[in-house]
Figure 1 (tube, helix red, strand yellow):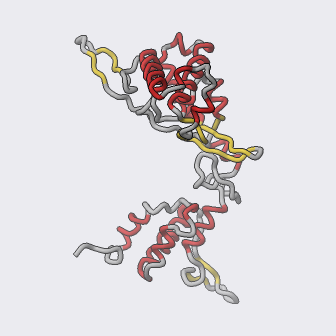
Figure 2 (tube, one colour):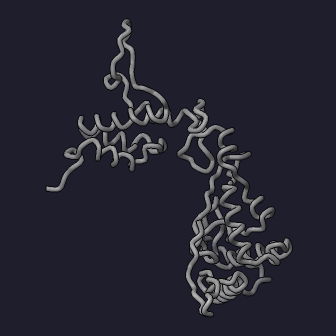
Figure 3 (tube, helix red, strand yellow):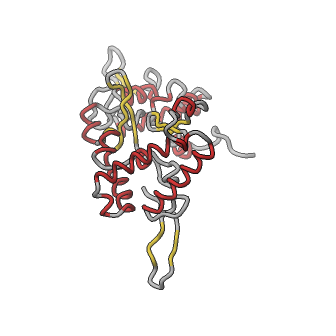
Length: 285
């Protein structure tokens, strides 16, 4: 007979609970700690001890309460529920300075972070700054896509500004992506401001032919009738499906050739000492 959760010792259950998103208060009221504690008394006691350890380790809270009218302390499992106290602390305390705050971090909505700590610990920049100041296109920033199919996504977030959503990107991620892309382009092209602007405009035209647009950092497919009103008669490649596919194919091959990449977006490795060439995909953190 295979073991069940009830048959496991607390030491193993503590390891299991560490994978139940104990630092994510956005899962309330159906948080795994709550649903597991509602199963039976044994699992509830294990969850309580697990939450008690989290409170003592991260919040420096020792779950001891004082009986009313006496000076005697006792464990608080009967009158104070540790899992509720832990979730309340996560939602109402900045995780860095330990001050009272209910503000969520821009780059991580599951983390409670005050405005000062969010600026200090997690430097960010707007999409406009990333494209204009650092010479990157939207295809360079929001990956994976047709141009960079093997690149991982950057850390992004959004917040409400003047009635609309403002998109923010992690500054270290943008600088790392800039170093990678400009390294592929070469020093001459990377230093050319006019070339980088033309390159970004060419990427916009490419995505217009693909039929995808950017919505809060995610590529979203346009409606099927999008080309009917978008085509004003001046761009012949937009008029037919075959024309759009041919335009995208030629544009991708041209971009990959400039960056020294194979067809499919894989970067070529440098030539070996024996004169042989090895090719493989490069994974970028």
